[in-house]
Image (cartoon, rainbow, N blue to C red):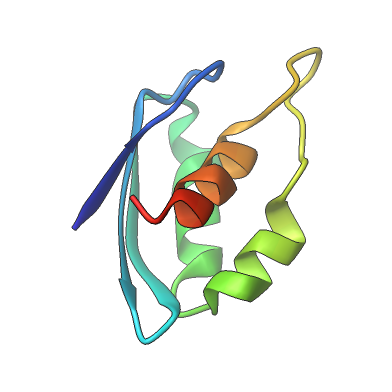
Length: 79
């Protein structure tokens, strides 16, 4: 299980696994529970490349990032 500490968003951490370049078991700590559960369900089993392509650069309101964008940073960092 990988853990990534987020920056600039309501979620404090993201836990996830990567197996054979696919994303599994995504869990956000804190943040908007319904939206983040939905996001985790939607990316389950998706390739890392597809998740990055779809979610990179998404912003949350006036913030320069979002929980989805932070997840991309987690995937890109390999943590």
